[in-house]
Amino acid sequence: MDADLDLVRRLAAAEHGPAVVVAFVAPGRTRELTGLRRHGRLPLVLRHGWEWVAVEGDVDLAGPDDPGLGLTAEEQRLLLRRVLAAAGGTHDDLDEHDRVMAAERRTAVLVRCERVYTHPPHARHAER
Image 1 (tube, rainbow, N blue to C red):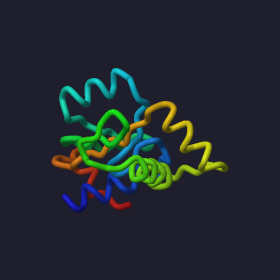
Image 2: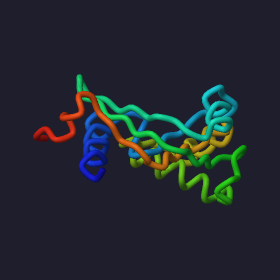
Image 3: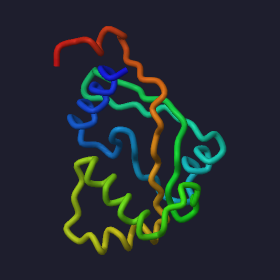
Image 4: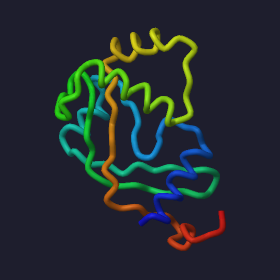
């Protein structure tokens, strides 16, 4: 599975998208979060060009409406900043970033990696 996770890291870094190994931020009060709360599991697919990798597992939610991890408001604020930075994102005014995240009730979605797969399966062993 380590080789598969290396592929996840490489594709996430190549795309610089909103998903990273393996966390992302979701807007509050959305169908996406409602489904995650109900099912507690998801596949997260990362792609760059024709190469893709999927990570599947249970999720932990950390946000103002999801206190399950027991994080304080300050810890949640810092976690959202860490997810932004890990995804290659930046913000000129982090105080404004924090204000918007709080106003939109943003939630960090953390995927506990249980299964990693690619198509075709041999792609995970290709030279990088």
